[in-house]
Image 1: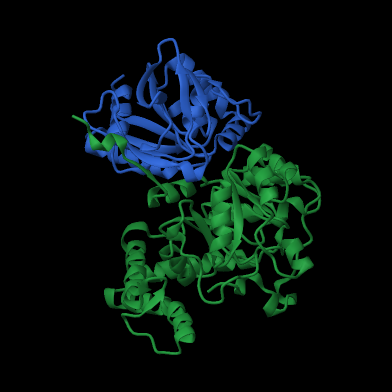
Image 2: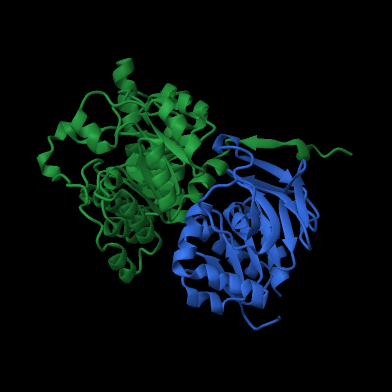
Length: 334
Length: 201
């Protein structure tokens, strides 16, 4: 008797997407712009690399529209290393995401570091086989991205500044709000879900010039009622099951030193992304190794002290207050 | 080796560490086995444990930090000298191997099991899959989760394959060492953790 179970193979399931993110926990994901840097990152102990055309500090300096990296560069990076390769797509640009999936990229970062492509909607990430990571400044953004299918969340921080303050702000915003959610009754949870659904409503109202009711689709085929219910369920899971975000949660945006990485871990991050911090510093290989050590030993001050010695100059860094509000990358996405 | 309380350590360098801790705790509870599960980060911890789990994660990263921290030699010693029961999943399976098929420069093996492993044998993340798997010693299928998974190309000596996909070996046992290319810790099914527990007591 043939057992039908033996022939059943499933790809791109929620478990596979979230499972991939879990394999990254406790690790450092490094921005690289070519195969040579990717090899340095891998040799330094990175759990994955993020392939992009320019690191955020250069995107900031260069100006203009920042897009998905040249697929040729991504392919060269894929061929050069055995660790997973991630790449960034513009917010809402689902065709860049499709192209990255076709290339064999392992995870897509729908990233505010690139210029947003869609003024209304983020990508419907459930439609893809490979997992997505998305940035957030607060619990509302995190929950919306998770509802859209993100398998991993990261703080937005303020990329390309070498300044940790925004990453800490965003991490604290999320954890503090989760504590509040844990105290909420059912009524309050429904209200919060409604509040968190408003960005879909606003986009739809602008597009349709009409007030949105429960049965109106507000994101792809999903109605306002469906979105509210979906977000409510995520909040309920946070309250009753997870007591934290229900997906892997990394820190990103401004991490420049081993101590920066370790403070994010002590504040509850599962791992860190380092963008400009490594290859904009004096000694990338040494700094990369030091940050990897710091993340693995984030609760051991003696190790942090040891690995922080003689790293050379960190990237110069920018005071957030000196950046005009319209140039803040974290304001992108909603 | 029946003791009052079993101490099971999960290497806590990188990867899905907490998932293994939770699964093993659940396994102890379901089998009414007195014991504790904790995360191992230092050399000293290695001497305290009765069994070890090497979790999934990135084999290159885990291998580098195991080496640097001196955990490597200590684990090798305990496996060789005390027959420390050890289970490795995915990256852990890679680390247990004596041989790697690929020639990547970036990983040091524990060289504990008579297996040769190929990393990322099924392809990249888009080729990652779930499949119901027949496993020797389990009565019914196991929902196996393969994430950029390695395969065991071949076994020799006393090492026995326990599960295969086509001709590819995805689970093998040698004495009280157990290697899996998939992730039972990502499911709710404790049967493989129970199987490992039976190898310990």
